[in-house]
Image 1: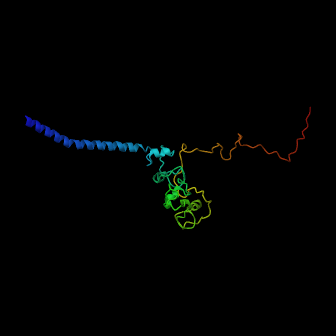
Image 2: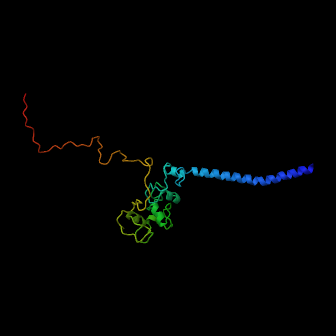
Image 3: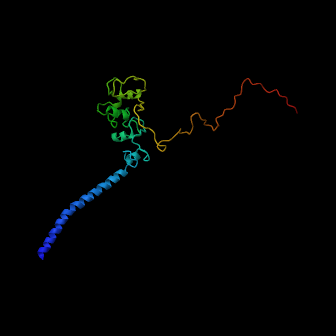
Length: 214
C-alpha cells in the first residue's frame, strides 16, 4: 500500500513539473497582450504620437497630427517628437536657427551650441559659403548647401520663419483662435456703421433759391 502511495505522489509531482511552465507561459502571453492593448490606447488618433505628448503641446486628439507643422519650422510633428523639440516653438533652443533647418544640416535642435565651439548654431556657417546659418534661413537659402546662394542678403538677419520646407500647418479651430483678435474683418468698420458713406457735400453747391410763402 505504501508503495502505491509513493508511486502516486511521484506521478503527481511529475505532472506538476510538466504543467507549471505551460501555465506560466500562458500568463506571460496574456500579460503582454494586455500591455499591447494599453499601449494602443495611448494613441487614440493613431497618428504615431503618444496622447500624453500631444496633450502637453496642446495638439488635438481628434485628428491625426503627425504630418502637421503648427509652428511652421519645416519639421512636422512626428519629426518634432523624434527630435525632442517643441511643436509649438519654431526654434526650440533659441539659437537663431529653426528646428527644421537644424535637423536638415545635422545640428542638434535642442542644443544651441551643438559642437561646443562657443558659437551658437545660428551664427555658424555650416556650408562654408561665408554666410551664417541664420542669415541663410532669412534669405530662404539652404544653410547646408554652399551652391544655394542666389538670394543672399535679401532677408533681414534674425527673423527666420522656417518656411523653406513645410508640412500641413493647419490647426483645428480649437487649436488656435480664428480671425482677428479684435473681431474686425478686413476692410470693415469699427464704429458700428453699415459701411455706406454719406454723399459728399460739394463746395460748389449752390444754395436753394426757393421762395417761402406764409
